[in-house]
Image (cartoon, rainbow, N blue to C red; front, side):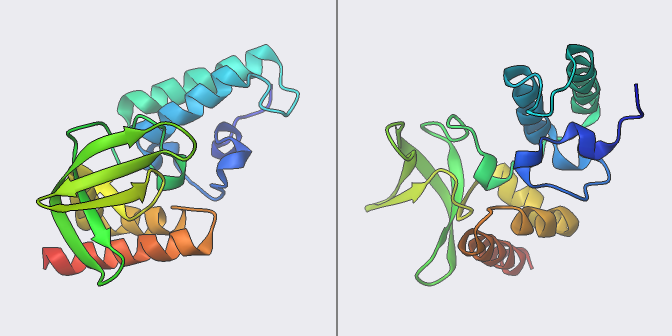
Length: 177
């Protein structure tokens, strides 16, 4: 069996080339990769069961030592935000941050959407939008500029999503000064 490199562990569809250390991605992204290798054992690469099992084992070991970090928005699972979660939202109109918003309703039909209700306003934001993050994610992104840069550049395969992520990071930087 050939020596396994980091790029062999990351499913190609994630579009995350050039990662030197899988632990950099955090527990949630590693768990997502493990789920992928379990659901698609050959990884569409005609891998032997033993090679897939080794990938899963290595990722589980990485998961044990990885830190909890914000997941990339485009890869968020449907249960990432739950009713009652406290979140931070970036308002697109004026690029202002709203803290202590509460997730009120989750729609699982079609495109998952989150309805944020804060005081008398209600706002609907798509689940995979980089405009919304948990409060703990906002704190992590504000304190870790290297990861925040990576998070913004890989937030979405679309330029609009990447731009929104950069706006969120900029607003978090301004808010923590």
